[in-house]
Length: 187
Image (cartoon, rainbow, N blue to C red; front, side, top):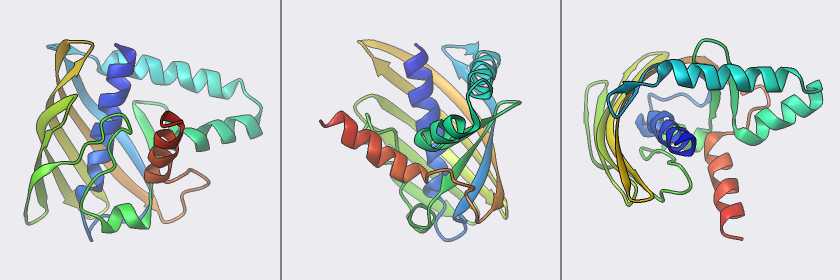
């Protein structure tokens, strides 16, 4: 179940790269607003898991903590937030980097002004979503069905991203992390 939540969260956060030229490369802070799975609000559970990860990272020596955050491609923060790095390639591309396990790309992408709608039809995830871009703020909403081990789960997610600047402060770009994960899995 935890793996399913993490995979869905990665897929959801990654959809922010749908924004083409209006998406800026650099450091973004992502705040989870809503995470509902099978009708149950999982926002508090995700916040607790993030707090547990924060405590684990805080107990590490600074160099080890930095290395761990770089290898994950995110920097966990309090209050359901994390920081991710969007590479120039991700910002210029209109296709998000999805979880390395899904090999999935969105279909039926449509742009209207500052709004992009899309659909997912992949082996383990189906659904639809919307990304709304307002300058340095991006709002992501997604409804999906995930399937793992023969069981299906419905999920509704909403997050808000805030641009922090061009410097990723040592955090690896999300597309690089996805390629590294995919490389390790194919060995």
